Length: 205
Image (cartoon, rainbow, N blue to C red; front, top):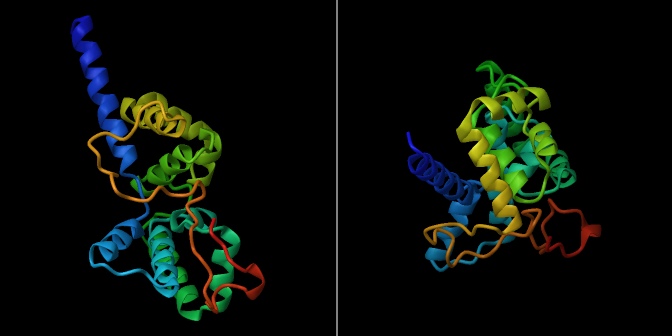
């Protein structure tokens, strides 16, 4: 492979990584976009349940509570309050963790797509890679080894850093017309929701 071929291959991999990182979103983002397509404004209850579903999905993939909160786009404190106030949600999260455990997806069991997705999203939103790796359940040493051994993972990390710094915008216009996410992913607005503590007032992230 000559120099030009190597350069083209590297550019192709960077483009692939940039495109993939641009599409790393909580699964609930699809539901929100579909509601908008139907001309419906989501109620706070719908938004809360969507975020709960994001947390349950993350738990079923072996992520711990802190990581589930990030996947749901809410502070961990709020997730814990939901667990205290909503019996059905607490049961669903316990069942999801039990499912993950039964299939060997417990935290620290090794790299999975869900952990890599969370790491990339955290990096893109500003977390340094060691903190993002720890949040996603990777050991620093283990993930550093994975990054060195997998050029694709290294390219994805570089793409997440580019997305954070704004050096390369998402390609292909995939995010055109979608509202920008707040830095912490949290944009619930309190409107008499019993799952939100009354002293919180209005929260707009």
